Image (cartoon, rainbow, N blue to C red; front, side, top):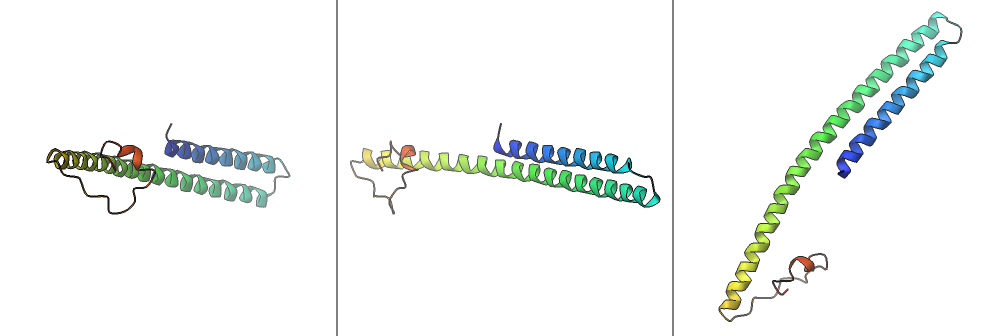
Length: 122
């Protein structure tokens, strides 16, 4: 499972637990003496819980859309990086086939990048 999906499911679980707790509280509160103001409080609480659940559902939908956009952007970036790495490899092999030495990188190569550039000789 992807982290975005786990986050979305966690948010949904929290919303459901919150709703269940609110409903249980409302039911327990309703069992006390049935006066008019208590009934009014119950409807207010129910309305607020409904609004809260709707707000959580909207946030969940927004997060799902945002994760889709992020996923598409990361896919495009992955393709771009693969393309550039292949291009650099072909340039290095062309330079070496001409019995020249490719120029050094403009800055020190980070340790995280080195495993992906092993065949370029950087």
